[in-house]
Length: 343
Image (cartoon, rainbow, N blue to C red; front, side, top):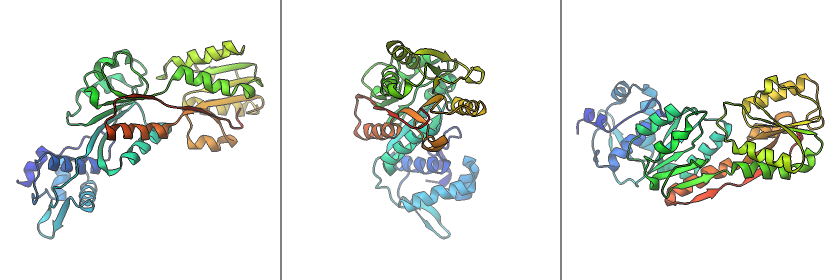
């Protein structure tokens, strides 16, 4: 095969969050697995690969070095790079689609990638909670993936998500974090139970919460978080006779001693802390703070922020295990309260 013909099988997607050198190397491995590249086939030069794929020379060289380290390709001075080994273990090919890459989503990603190891190639995309982008990415997806791992959160338009997700073969689908009503057939899923989780976590924190007369849940109107969180919050407050309020904009809310705040958005946490400090209120004594989603920085911030959180590392590990073993079942993640001085 002429080196120029190889570009029929090698693709780099500029919209993918997967590093381009890995996209390049994974494309070459996929071409070998599919029988499109044979042993001793000569590969394009680094300069040609860089020019045709519109990637940097360093990226092309890094992809080749990665393949050479794995024993897939070899090089000879004057001859260039060529396929040295076609006895390659069949890989999992993952289409990974996240709504955003926040601190806790990175924990899921890192755990998922580490658990799969080098036995998987991953094309990683982010749709920024935008349903139109979500729809486009799935409609334009390749068909050779072994699994489609998706976190489905939308600011708006999500009521039609089930129609798009139902186009994916169910034996290849792994949904994470949130169930989507209308998704049919036997598929894999790892979910939070949002209403039960916040109710249970606040119940566990009931004793320190008794220092405060009013609980306020900061829940922006344009939020991708499900309303089940609001339902669980209200149920707890009504059962244990707490005054309570849903706050849509913390930047405009009056903050007073005797109140405890539950925040779900990271930006709102910063605004809340800044305002508490500016009012010279003592966090954990005069004003309480509970933050959704455990991240390493919350252990250190202002001597520690109390969190209620699912186990994101476990989510990534469990998703990888489902992909490896092709399991078709649903699992509910544990939810934890971590008490710190902010409450």
